[in-house]
Image (cartoon, rainbow, N blue to C red):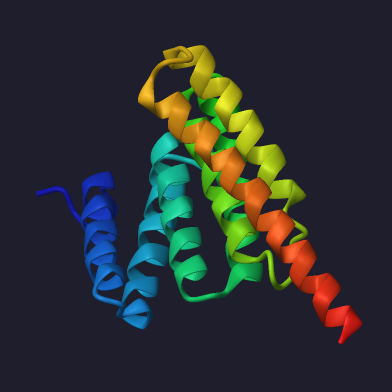
Length: 166
């Protein structure tokens, strides 16, 4: 028997939380994510990819709830862990940059000017292009992400200008 302090138990908790989150039951998902984080922190340590995955999952939950101020430092923490553990040329590190950029895109009408999302997406694109080449679909998707972020930032700036004129 593995017990409640085993990484597999944390995975089960995380999967349960993912299901609640997918159903839109964020309140039920949160304690399972938090418990999975605590188990992985205790058993694996804070410099482990599985711990980073758990932190990412909680950040994603808060983002889906619109709690951007809580989600942001968790995404940043995920980036820092993955950078330290996996390196800057790892696809999971690039995915973490994209996730934070997605958050900033969500915040563009609130607190973000869009430039941070563009910068993160450009970094992510460089990593993906280096890993997979220019013609790979992942590289092309990352390039579209930059264009979308630029479009969002431009649209937001125009909207802000209209509001100031009104």
